Image (cartoon, rainbow, N blue to C red; front, side):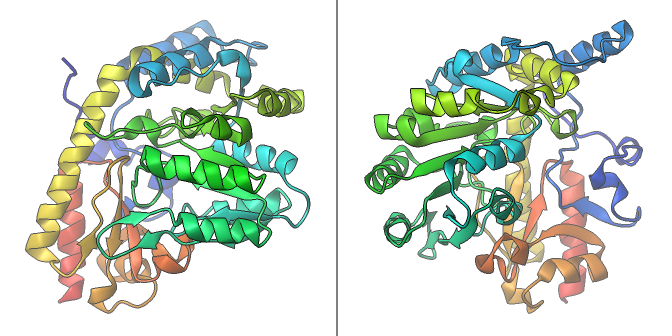
Length: 384
């Protein structure tokens, strides 16, 4: 049975030196960037300690497929998808997977579709690769949210070259169902486009939720898709720098293999070790962590109902991020700014996620329940 997972105490967390813990004074609750407050999976910690003890701090070994094999085995067991490790390459992080893939899939000025509200760096990665952002907001009928396939179809028909897909979707924790992804693949294929699928939050899908890898949905998806995969969110390894390019077709495999050698050599050695150990031996820890996050979602819902009933939470199905509609508080387009200034709670600012983010903010709930309680109580005190 998985052992319970509990967040580190605040006295330990404030000794950390990552961006989450060094961006604000100690009177601020940092709930903005996507770093979790849980301790490392024991298997990962042991492997990293062993590497340090050995002085194993050099470059990555060339074409070491052990981490790729561990990820493939995890994907097969969890999602019924077994990508071929020989069609994968590593690099520093998912952002590099996206940018380096786009560089080779677009011409200067080509449009690339994003579906707002969406992970803010997407708006920078596309221009970095030479493209132009084409924003096609998610369809929101007030009850459910989904990809707007008809609008994506229209954008591709108008000249957009491809789609940068966030799956599961950050900031909503939205897990796209297979039917939606099949429709997306058919539309993209009809227009001769491509999909780069950022699936970094996929290992954090909740119990009973079916995550569908984009490259598993159809021959069309396999032909025109590249997936960006990583253990960095699932196992809290962002600073160790390892992610995978994943392809299923010969054409996309050739694109990945044609990348400069330095793209792969920039992979972090400790990241490679930690990623392998997480996917191979950290699954009990991961499942326990997901259970703790789901309990935090329940706790956040209860705290909001009791103290901030006008704030709406769109309940996520994956990850440790909560998308809050704070517009009823009357705090303007960027309520996160008010939360920081007056409540001393640092949230991710909603407008950075695109126009649908006005009036919203994203809260990191990969933390102790007590931190959520304190954050909601502080926000409620300001709202009175």
